[in-house]
Image (cartoon, rainbow over all chains, first blue to last red):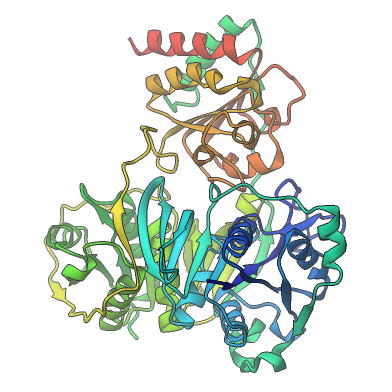
Length: 263
Length: 324
């Protein structure tokens, strides 16, 4: 049975990037932007399911106008089409406002299941997808590392991870799943995929297309607002313990006990 | 809405989690600034003992939603139960622990009640009548200061920020909150046996991590021996995980786990930015690497430039000798 699967993605700085701040904002020049890594695991699972059962994968990305290139990456690995939600009026929102935008978009897209990352690696909120589930009155399974469809295709059985422990959760479909690392190996785009992505449709939606009330979204709708962004506190300079491995190890044991007092 | 702070307690088979007691202490500071009281809530099945313990921590009341339908975790049922206790308490601020459970249920409850939620915070205070919070972003590569535009609001606070409150005070009254639960669509049907890793990375006081320098799965053996001596958890860099030497669940970094133990020992880890993001708020960092130019030394409190296979066993022997 074919599935319509929506994957919620975000454009984030590559995790190998250094984050530099200027006047309380992240310096974006020279920063390499990628699809959020946990969302990519969700995308991979969606692609596998459609390969097995037929259907369609729609990538939905809410982000600034320059996110088009990132959306192409999702199309290049195999998503069939994409929706790009972008509007200055929608920017500056918190998780509550963002979830309302995505929920409004998802009311316009037919789906049997939704995948997203367990958190985006920029703001580390870990709440948008779960808020979307609540707003759409859908069940969810969070932090999924194993996913199996039940035989009738109307429910799923997942292994999910929470605080280092694992348990098995079942859910009926439609449902929202958030992906955790370990769900599967990611594929790389082929040259053919990259070329083909240029021909795949990207639908652009703004606030008017979604019909969201201006007061509930963007900076106006944010209930939590950021006032300052700072670099983390610098660590005091450390010391290199001299001597051969044996001597240095003994000195380290002494320092950890007597100076640092952590052992 | 009152000026009260409501803390949502969390437990497991052995009793309340430590973070629940920590939340009480954090809430006391906020309540004093707001001129309100600290109240607590427990939700679950057969949680009377948790409620009685929480009642002795200095809170003025404990709301209890105890229902057989909450025996196995189901996000929708817990959302309904938590919404019911929050509606009964009418607090200005709800505090959750930023555990896996706390982060999951708080997000859904916040959406149901249409409240703001700041996740995974490391500091909370009242400034000019407003709640201001500190939360690491980009896995700690930057620190965001955020403010709740209005009350009521929800927050999840990381464990280990303040000492836990003691359950040694006179017992506050319990208030039962009735909940009506529909059959959940998603639910836990089976708890799996925990992985053999003895100490949980998130809770460990000491973490010992191996990177490319361990050279293979067997290279973690001396790290494991040292971990036994120190009751430590084992971590790994992405390089070691990608090489297939250790399960991804040990990965420390921006993709992986963020840890802040008292002692972090990085063995054979060069210190890629994405790894540093996951561990650089540890109290004391030790780096052991053959390469004196490895970036890990820049953030280490103590460094040893030598082969980890020489240093780790020697360190283990020295610590054992020291303990005697």
